[in-house]
Image (cartoon, helix red, strand yellow):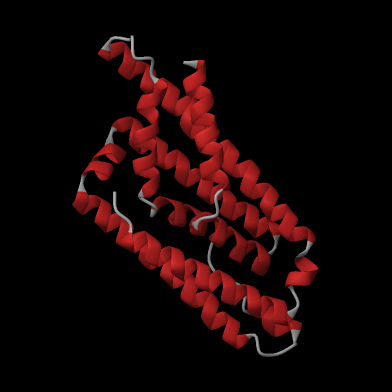
Length: 215
């Protein structure tokens, strides 16, 4: 069981550190609005993981992972949201054609950063597929079905979801603080234009990738 847990920790760490839609959303928010908004966005992402964890415990995430229709609906909604964020960044990059800092500051993303992170994570059905695939590996094979199910719920709630949320907070939170240290560089109009274009293209790319993904 300990070996299984260590393996799960390794998988969670890799999943957390690999760049994806969450990191792109955090980058966009932290660079444009500062570390406080960046950390709030990270908090929203971690909250989304906890919601996915709760859904998995009650079986809804498993239904989503098994149902092609449900998966497609969530997938397209998530892809659409990422595409909107990406297009907004690209449009904003075209507006940063002046060296006036006030103009650049006025073009910062609007909306609640926590909600942005939450929606970005909740509209990623891959989380449901990942959780429902990982959780069964945490249960020892020699347990009875009833005992095994009870242990799955406990291990999932305490170990998998909470651990993933903590790793996400630490990794993306540290990433936000690194960006904050260099914010003076990122606030230069030319750099802001370039970052908006890069994050816009990345978000659009992830949106297309999510739309084309399979369960």
